[in-house]
Image (cartoon, rainbow, N blue to C red):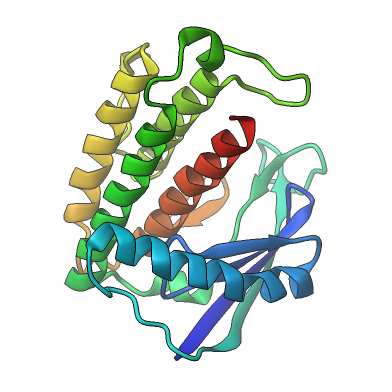
Length: 230
């Protein structure tokens, strides 16, 4: 099985290997070589994860061959779109992100979003308020804060496509916000089959394929984040 890889260097001081045909499959490393070395284990975990949720062998990777398809060096821009070390990071735009999503990819992506949301809610289910609100010296958020961040990030992704609405309209409760933004996101994705639209927002390119790749990564990354705090 050929696994095409996109490498993103320099985001949050590390490298990330993306399995371009398997949204939600990724690995980190201190550099690109380490990220690629860590990807096979991540792919095996991904296969088990998908198949466990699906109840059948939906992903069958077999013996796989990793092939580097693209590399992106993260850079930062200020509000005037000039390079600035203190600016906003511009994340990967791979050549593969130009490809429109087909019906099967959107259906699979929506299922994956369902799987990841099940996992997110399962790990926080039953946690007492004091645990949800516990702060950590080296962490930006409490667990409740992470939940709110995941939901707000999905509003931000929607906003890349002009579908976010006023941020002030987001529910205050993190659980309600998660449900609110996810419902809108799934509605948006469902309508993106075959859409060749590519948008620019705040110096960064966005497409339906990149949207799916980033949304799945973000929730799954924070599932790992919360798990480490428990």
